[in-house]
Length: 64
Image (tube, rainbow, N blue to C red; front, side):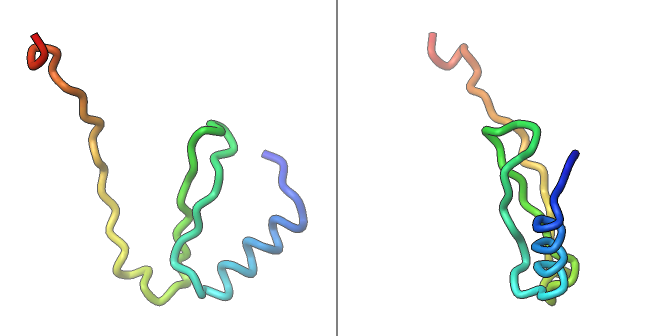
């Protein structure tokens, strides 16, 4: 995907500054979604735990 010098500079500064653990960005592929970028340089990075939350749907039998 194309990028710009300004975007690369911003990202590099964000990583090296490490003042924020995460940054929410728009998805370049699905415009209705966003992504979270986690900074491995941040002091709290070692405490990050990721989990998968499965999608939930109601069983239609509940409504009959």
